[in-house]
Length: 251
Image (cartoon, rainbow, N blue to C red; front, side):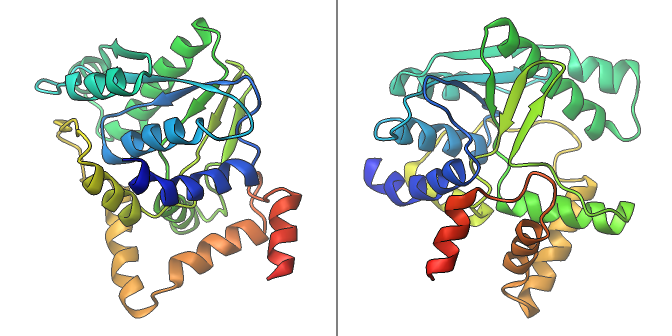
């Protein structure tokens, strides 16, 4: 496992350093959905903390939305194997979104409620950092969705402080592409929690993912150029720290 994780963890460390995501003494809660992204993130952060100069600890938290046949035991077992405390929060989000409110566009409300449950839990535990599994492709897709659907230049930030809860969200995978994450997950044979939500892979994001994939066939470096533009504009919160600029100047 260590050999597979070494190079990938270097990509994660670069993001952590460029955006000062982790401070000495932090406890970082990982939002563990059970998908490949958050599971690989957990393993990479667990690997990173062995040699990172700023000492930090980890916890893993899953949100059980209430869908049938979603078994979180495999990721719970993984956390036991690597020595990371794990909690699975049982919620009634599925019932509220689908059965009570019968939302026509359920993904937005579900995401808000899921993040709210995570933030409430870690705040009660006194944890101030929450690591999320958004990656390079997620960032580009979000930027393009905002541009084409809303007419705005906008995207989630690598580091986001939520003043209401006092929680800081960090996204250490922003330099890692989705395929690279999938390759690492396959090599590590990570457990995956099957998503039984009926809206999985049917959202507007799925449409943009397919569109960008098709465009990349003609313009292979398109996503990298979009991502670079986000840093150079820069979008609010997307300008890396001084070390990043110095490294670029040396090249």
